[in-house]
Image (tube, rainbow, N blue to C red; front, side, top):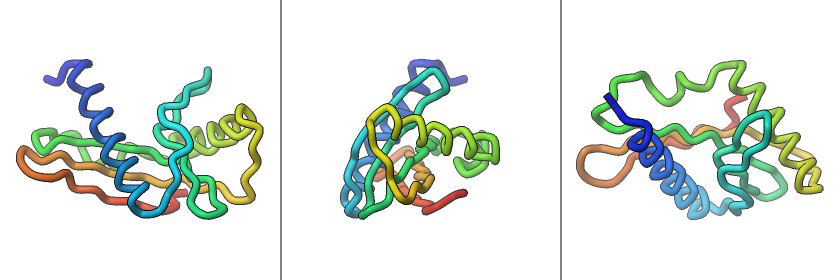
Length: 122
């Protein structure tokens, strides 16, 4: 069984890997772990003129609790879209296009993390 601290550490690791990966792909990191009363956004980025809200799902090789993709269903997607609107309001910004992406990070027992970036999950 995984402890809360271990899950949090794994999540922080995945967000760090995802942020670095996206920045190497030309994304500009605007915010990380933004919270409000309605929830949290893992990463908020800009890619050209597009505001990108990125959900990061991290798994270790030892976990057997489904794929990261299975964790983002229609309700989660709606919440992320609403949070993107709230983030823009809180920062006085208005993007013409807002997109929700998913970055799945798999931390193997050895070696580098595997990263899969799914553009526009909704």
